[in-house]
Amino acid sequence: MRKSEHEPIPALPIKLDSTTNGEYWPRPPSPALAAAQKRAWAAVDEHTRALRWTRREYLTSACGAATVLLALNQMGCAGGSYRVPKEAAREPAAAEGALSGNELVIDVQTHQVSAVRPWWDVSGPSLADFLTTTPQARCGAPHWARCFTDDVLLREVFLESDTSVAVLSALWGSPHPMLASEAARTREKVAELGRGRMLIHGIVQPNEASWPEIETHMQRLVAEWKIDAWKLYTVWGPNGQGFRLDDELGMKTIQTGLDLGLTRFAVHKGLPLPGMNRAYTSPLDVGPAARAFPQATFLVYHSGWEADHVEGPYDPKAERGVDALIRSLHENGIGKNGNVYAELGSTWRELMKAPDQAAHVLGKLLLHLGEDRILWGTDAIWFGSPQDQIQAFRAFEISAEFQERFGYPALTPERKAKIFGLNAAHVYGVNVAELRGHHTSDLVTRLREEYRNDPNPSFRTYGPRTRREMLGLLRSPFGH
Image 1 (spheres, helix red, strand yellow):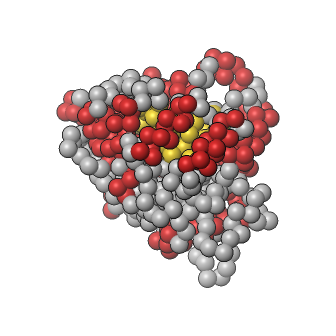
Image 2: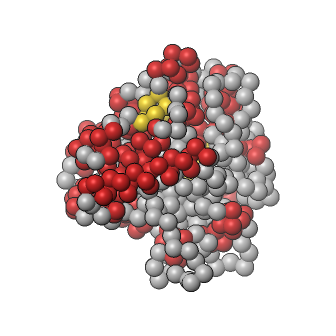
Image 3: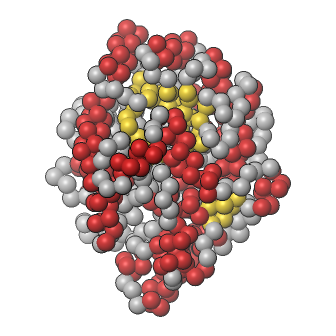
């Protein structure tokens, strides 16, 4: 550490910092959230002294996570809160009872970059401009790119969280920070540790090359790399202009994907990428595409959520946010159990710090799309380990008041189990009983049990946390 750098502030086990995934500006804590952080740290010190534990022992226990959620409950939340008993702050059994679980957790949005291929060695800007500015780049590896690779993903996702299966989702840009061949190698590496624990996406950017080149690329993704779904960023374009799912280019891309026998399309919607035309991140084109291609399955990443848009009760005239996605589906006759799924990557991570907004978003998705059409995703590793997101979701509940006022369904354990993994298992054709059987004693499970005998989580987040770090990302048209 340089002398000019400040001593890092220790992290809370439920991460309440301002880190983003690079697709939106870091959001400074609201006064209510800042107060909750302060209460949490005061409680940590109090309980550590009372239990005669070290601070690290306390923070790495379930009691530490429970203390943060209890502090969030004091924000005056009317619509959403965390069901954690007060005694969980000092009684490990009570904390484990509130925050542990045996659900099948399938994280449909995780990321890494390659450190084998020197994609950063270019004369123009690249994703390296962003990654090298983040604290994680100083992880101590021989080269900074190794701080964001498969080894980091394996540790953060499979050892430090309860995730059972991860989907390695593709990144956008040129040059690509991760190729399908590199994702396939990570899948093979994970397979050596446990069967069926990783699926991969293949990126398709139909506006970056001639159509014959795009078509050949799509054929290779299926034939050579056996991808499990297509990944589309309609907002991305080489000149800042994207495309729509329901325009000529989008329709051609979807039809080609279907012709190649792969019907799953993961589509980034919401979170306007800096420097790109935000019109193309709107989810209003999802409904028309889903209606035109009933044989396709659309996985709407981020659910259309935008960081600078406050979520409330459903507005049928909405142009932005989760409501715009719901509106698009309604206007095109896509109801519950339709061919559209809403994904929670980054969305839940931000909203778990704003429980009332979280209650609105989850309540609206349950009410309008249905409990079978919501997918769990975390955007790991940009936010470090997703364990805090898992723990918070297990404890979260929608208040009886919001259920009565807005007609939201209760967020029951059965519904949470569907969201955590059963819905994704259905989408990807995973045999749950067979998968659980394989995972009972595989190497991932054994390593996880060993690790938890002496855990050493960093509670670190890897994305940009400050305006300066975000400006580093904006210098690159290729970052994620």
